[in-house]
Length: 358
Ligand SMILES: Nc1ncnc2c1ncn2[C@@H]1O[C@H](COP(=O)(O)OP(=O)(O)OP(=O)(O)O)[C@@H](O)[C@H]1O
Ligand SMILES: [Mg+2]
Image (cartoon, rainbow, N blue to C red; front, side, top):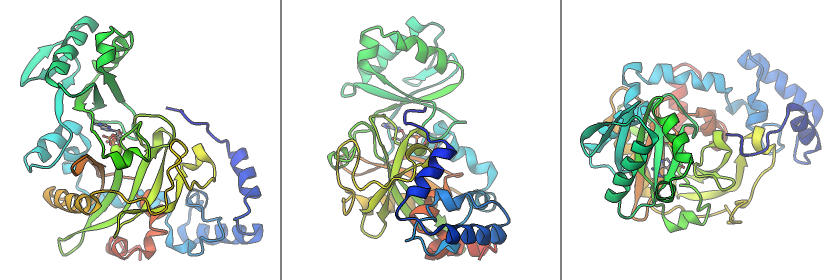
């Protein structure tokens, strides 16, 4: 979406050289060579995990993203993947367990829309607007809807926020939305109302928590790590791929750690101690209902068969956690980052051991 400035390789290199917290040039070269030999690949993660910083001493505990992405092939059965990756199937599957999910008010595939348990053919922007008026009539308390591509996208792309005002005012944007939406399938969800505490971080988006789980060889589900994502400007999605950032959560307590980050290509090597939009300080910020969020992911990870390594996105609503989605091909590099190297993490060690990476 390109909402934040992107740094070129040259600009990043200059930032790195000027960084007062970096290791010496000699040490950096030696470490990069060491990791190249160990992993037999160019260790790009030396930069993306900030291993050039003096305080990152345990460089061997971090893994290249390429290695980490390969883990899903071992742990997650391909036949079950659509239960998580298809947002429609995800809703149908998890709805039956009385889990707190965002309400799905409608879905479509191309021109066929399903609303109120009936299929309706929508072929013009005017019909689309009239349908949305009907939808908003049933959603008395809502002034917007989240419309998300059913499958095939990630990172906050293919997500629209349609407001009641746009519908009432015949906004021209509705024509654009219509033209995009009828190209493929979308789910239409109520907009989650997040807990007021989390509005202190950034009120423009739902600041969701990524919690990953592992079903260990004994069949028990264990929580691995957690971090919160937040838009670093006024965007309505929090994804890192859409210019958002992340702050590690101390998983036992649900408190934020002191430093937040942006993807290096968007934010360079800057470290953030407070949110750039609200100036809320990260250190010790307590996430409400965090214990319940952990219980929730343990429950939902236990319900899906043959999926052992999953990254869950959990929102915190006014009265408790809400499950946004589960990802079978989640960004394990994020775990490597917040766990300060997955090789040093007691639960992740089991993940690595089973595939003989340890
Ligand atoms: N119903 C909703 N109400 C408010 N905000 C939402 C809602 N659904 C999603 N969001 C926002 O959009 C972000 C991305 O949503 P979601 O996780 O469903 O899609 P995604 O990450 O792009 O999908 P995938 O990982 O499957 O590609 C969420 O983290 C949250 O910030
Ligand atoms: Mg997501």
